[in-house]
Every structure is written in structure tokens, then in C-alpha cells.
Amino acid sequence: AGDFGCIACGHCMAVCPTGAVSATGRGLAPGDAFPLPPLSARAGAGALEGLLQARRSTRRYEDRPVEKDLIERLLAMASTAPMGFPPSPVGVVVINGKEKVRELAGDLCAAFRKWRFLGTPIGSLVLRLMMSRTETALMKRFVLPIVEEIIKARENGRDLLFYDAPCVLIFHYPMKETTDPVIACSYASIAAEALGLGSCIIGTLPPAMRGSAALKRKWGLPKDNFASIAMILGHPAVKFRNGVRRRFASVEYL
Image (cartoon, rainbow, N blue to C red):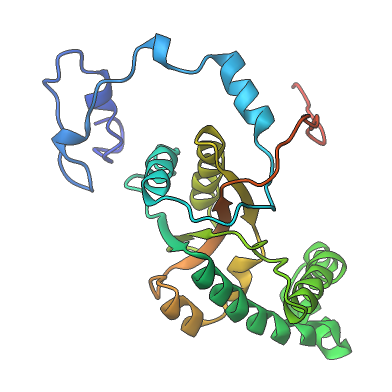
């Protein structure tokens, strides 16, 4: 049980060589333990590195739906993401089908139009009162211009929010500030690459949906949860030939 008592982490079942140990409660059942695949069936460092290098944000999709069994396998893979404290309170809403995705995009663009107020002198004052200097600068120089382009594109029949993707996954959580849903979404994007699907993480959805109880209710989020991050998903209509090297801003050994 460790120093904190049983928190349903499952480690006892995971290390028991005979299957004699089981745990029940907090969302965990004895049948949740299963044999791990042999080492020969697991990705080595080279295969994993290749998968991570190949994963890129996809913004062009084939005009066909994502099969439900693929979504369910992706979510099963993403559910293995580490969590801060089990059982994971992360929830996922799946918006599957281009018509539903277009409707969601329209609802969010209506919410974005209200943000135009933040570009006015009074709105700038509100931003300074509510946010830090860095956050205010990010909102004015990056977020608001992007939102304006999304609105204009929508008015001209183009989708710069979800890029005509056939599926959107919304990861939600009972608290505003947490890493669990972001980690789960990151796992989902890697799983998508492994399943031959394209994905792109969308950060503009959560702030628009958080401010509207009506949007949360319409699109299936629990009233006490917050939209944390979203990801679009589909069969990619583009093939990448090269990777692009990324670097951390700094790495210090102490």
C-alpha cells in the first residue's frame, strides 16, 4: 500500500509473478490486470524514435470518416498515459462526423466573435487586470489575431479551426489547471500516428468553451468539468517526406 495507503495505482498487481494479488475499488477491478506483451513485441528505442519523428500536425484530411473501432483503439492506447492521482478524472468527448464538427466550429466562432471586445482599449484594460503582462502580450499579439483569421475564414467558407477534419476529441477535467488531460492528448496524438491517422492539437477550443455553460451542455461536457485541450483526427491527405529537428530552449545539467 505504500506510505499513503492504497491509491489504486495497480503496482501490486503489476509486479506479482503469480497473479495472487488483486485490488478492488477506486475504479480498479481484479480483471484489470493483464500480461504485458513480450519484449520482442514492444517498440525499441529506435522504433519509438522513428514514430515520434514521423508524428507531425496534420491539417489536410481525406473526405471520409474515422472508423469507430480505430477511435476506440486510439483511446485505449491513450488511456495508458500516466496520471497525477488514480483513478484518472480525465474525460473525453468524441465529436465524430464532418457535419457535427462543422456545427461545433460554428458555435466556437460565435464565441470567438465576443473576444473582439478584448482588442478595444477597454478590453485591453480588462486583459491587464485579469492576466499577467506575458499572458496579455500573448493574447494580443498571437491569440486574438489567430482568432480573427479563423472568424474571417469561416465567413468565407473555410475552416481554419478544425481544417475540415472529420473528428474532434475534447479532453476535459474537473480542474482548470492540470497536466493530466494534456498528457493524455499527447499520448493520443502518438497513438494516432501509430494507427496511420493524422492529428493536430487545437488549443483555441478550451478557452471558448470554458466560458459558456451552454456550449458545455450542448457538446456533452459535465457541467463541473473544464475543456482542457482538443485534438482533430482523420485519415491524412498529405504525406511527409522529411522530419524537422526540434530543440528545447535550454538544457542545463546541474
